[in-house]
Length: 318
Image 1 (tube, rainbow, N blue to C red):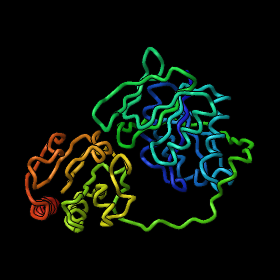
Image 2: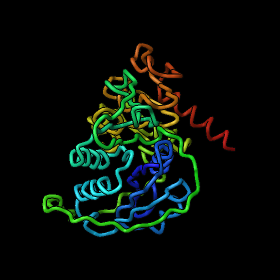
Image 3: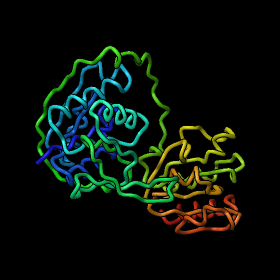
């Protein structure tokens, strides 16, 4: 059975659920092998075993964390050469996509980004994507080299498959070019009780209809244990940080529930959330394009609807 390399998505050993999802997908294609880059493996070890990693390649040398993504791509290229895997799965984050692009070039392979499903097919590895601003769903098969696939968070249900992985330390001679961009400083991100936008099972987003007041959006999100997103219009107006922008030029999300409040539903925004499992919209304009997309639509003022919804959720919690 061929190996499937999974680049572990983690922060100092705290494994993000995207990794569990990718390991689950990898088991459909072959034998999952996790590639752990950086420090904190002791904290990650049990999670990787619980989701079926048969092998863990450890790259703990500082060269892989003291520089930007180029050394990681060179490491993966060396592992591809050594193991001839059925595929390489990487989380669809900004860094993940850059690693994937560099890896595809180095190995002369085809690449698929933002896959929402991965399956074994007659032609090899088949992926499913939402393309052209979310207007079409397509299936894709890589026909050249080792398939390099970035997997959209929340798109594949993680399933446990306990294993006892073997461990192997790996290293590669990193080129001078890969050392050109160096990390000179790190600052701890301001902590929040809300989940990460890309990993959240529920996302509540606000748009132009908030008029800059995200209070009702945040209150409803907190009641649901959700992440807070924003449309490009809200971000461009300076009402919410750019890191929370959902859309084609922002973050792509695929939660179980997506609530769009005061968002018209322009193609740019739809491209970043259309693969959500259930979509609810609140908008005063009954002709808003967002209503063409939703599972449930509420025509009303978000400043009236969201506080009522928040009270109902809180009451149901007792």
